[in-house]
Image 1 (tube, rainbow, N blue to C red):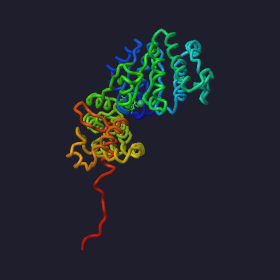
Image 2: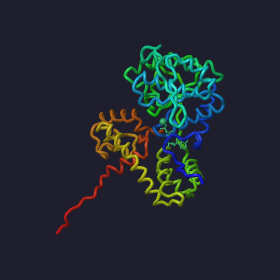
Image 3: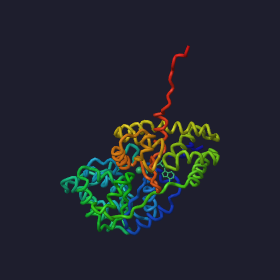
Length: 390
Ligand SMILES: Nc1ncnc2c1ncn2[C@@H]1O[C@H](COP(=O)(O)OP(=O)(O)O)[C@@H](O)[C@H]1O
Ligand SMILES: [Mg+2]
């Protein structure tokens, strides 16, 4: 009998696991990749960007194309970025020996280093060849080699840069941006720039002052429709031997506000605590509690990283979302004292993608679990013990 595993993965959706929806976006991005066009994919944190980008890479490879996926999150320097890109590139060329031998030579700033793992498999990394002198030179060189490789391939090379805005946030970010833009400008490769810090990424591609202005088509990753998501949960649980009532799945999706990770994390906890039994509402309430508890260390560090003024504002917004955080009524209800400080905190929270505005201008927290955590953790009602009155 094969071991049953939890069907709700809290990490990126694996190549062999089903994605819920996003079909039209995936089809549009495939067309763009084949045509050598550049795109930006935006969505708040943990909404499914990386899973979608990886699925695009898988499907592009399945039809014979070459695809490179490089995670640039928190990259510390241009040099480190060059290294990550070269390593990702060598890994993507290792689809077969012929491709590797023919194309890896085109990467002049790095040489591939193969290491044999204890289980007999191989890993590839990149060592600087010494031909490029500075970190920025190495980065420009490795990005030019993406074009050389693309020109030597039947279809455009698909290059995915995940959390791309982190590169522009480095100290010498504007130099890096300008150098990359002029290198990428006439490329045959197709780029997908992915990011969660939407304000920063939008500014990079939509501000006339920035090097990447009009360099790509911007697309938002939509949230999955509630019905579709809850049917997906029931189907996934069912395949793994647990019968989930549709109304429990509907409530779960509503609690997670369709936010991809929040829904998945609650589903993960619910499956873990009940399968193969049929879950009920109490089980669901307990699963929400467990999912929140598991996020505590992350949320504590997010909260600690904010300024005291931003903490006050995010707590107010968690209690009550609003279109007008600077209106007198809202400020007095939420005990906020200074409009100028609120303005500053709003910018910081939007840049950090902790909050966003919906189409109606209402400001809300992008992570429904963080909202719940703030509302339950700093509860205004605490148990007190008092001596009995005589
Ligand atoms: N289309 C999808 N269908 C079902 N689950 C998904 C989908 N996309 C992402 N997930 C799940 O959502 C969570 C966040 O996904 P991830 O791709 O890491 O998001 P991001 O890159 O936006 O932070 C993970 O638990 C992942 O398994
Ligand atoms: Mg991601």
